Length: 280
Image (cartoon, rainbow, N blue to C red):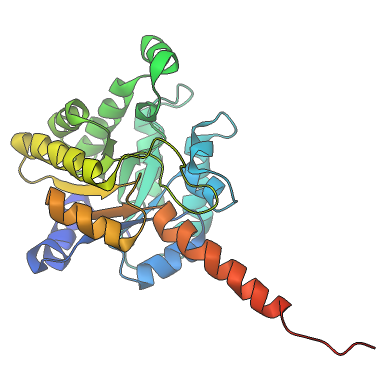
């Protein structure tokens, strides 16, 4: 079911914000994740190329490697897996804004015509650092592409979400007209392929999330701010950051479709394996 930008805004306001209920956006890499996230009450279903790799048993960071057409993967997932299975919730497409092989205005038109209600900037060069990031920026594949795509999507009446990693990025996205800012704390910790090192403490994540929120709201008080990633892996982590940073909800990807599956699947297999048989 497709929604206009204003319909998504009104829907989130009526069903969540006005009732004091957290907004939850669920990253879905396969149809069964989307189906049961929707049944569990997710307000937005978000798909990215990394979801396909994640649910294939690989790190979400595989979505940043040159091993597939990021935008093409999302179009295929949307058409063949996610949009046919989601019945009522808005579906958000992860767009790789720095893709030099696609005309972004045409890609956004494809996304809208297919039935998506909005976009989010993923993969994003904002996850890169150091010399590689500098080279991307100097080659024309930098952060400005993310900002430009959000601005373009806003003008096309798509609901816009943006991953940001610091205060200046939050300010730039707010100026571009973004509807929802997601304070990204890095790859999610935990489980078999989660981030092991470099994850900020939960307290630090809450502080940075609050700073990002304040910067965005100073430009546009109507922006929704959600938290995501890094040390925010389980419901109690999200509850802490939502309270301390005073934000309006959470975006879960690994935390909602990988971590909940890994251990129960392994334990179920062990239970079947433990069934004895009679020796002949």
